[in-house]
Structures are given as structure tokens and as C-alpha cells.
Length: 149
Image (cartoon, rainbow, N blue to C red; front, top):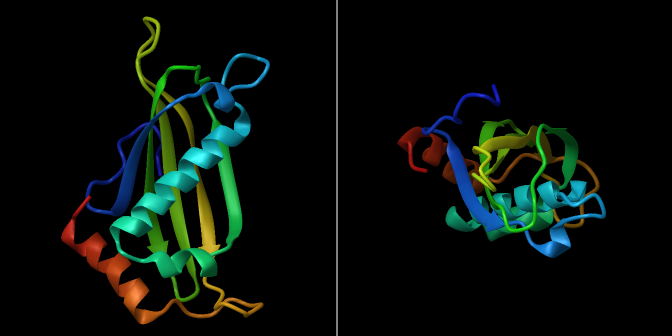
């Protein structure tokens, strides 16, 4: 994903808007590095709730995570997070994400962070990756085909 361009509208994706709260900041006065990860995970949760796939969560551990910080976010600033399913494989799913800080204190909207993560399907009680269930994969790929946000 090119983080400067808009994310594709035809992909399986979700967007979540939040406000930076005091608990999201650190002693330096801007977001704590973990806040971005929480926003991304909350957006991922929204995506799978929207797809009516609650069974995704207990069986999809992270196997890779990359996060690039580009700008600071401040207490009271609105933040828009978008998560996109970039690829679904036999046993893994690759996502990209962007976190944008809204206009704040006279400063324009800014890309605060972007990156990617990969989850693998591990059946409950299992210790190794297994293929995604057909109904889960079908819902994810059907949304990609339909162009629904």
C-alpha cells in the first residue's frame, strides 16, 4: 500500500473514528506508541463484526506486524483508522492500515501512522496454522468482490 494515496474503496475494509483521550498520551504530550495499535485492533474488530464473523478472533493470532509512525497525535484530536484486507491466503490474511489525525489547532489533517499485519488461522486448541474455514474466507472475499465498504 502506498500510504500517501487513499485506500482502495473496493476492498474488504472498515473505518473507525475516535478521539485521542488522556489515557492515549504519554509524558511527551502526544500519543503513546501503543495507542495506534489499539486503534488498529479496534478497527479490525469492527471489520469482523460488520462481516458477522466473531469466530475470527479466537483463531487469528498475529504472526507479523509492521508499524510506521509519521506524525504525532494529541489529546482531543480526532483520529480516523482504516484497516483493509489486502490478501487472504490458505492459512493467513494480510492487512494494511492507516491512521490519520484530523485537523487540529490550525494544523491540517495528517497521516500519523501506516503499516501492515498478518494473522494466521489456528484452530482452537491447535498449535499450527490451518486453512481458513470456507464460510469465513467466503465472506471476506465476497465483500472484496462487491465493493462494499
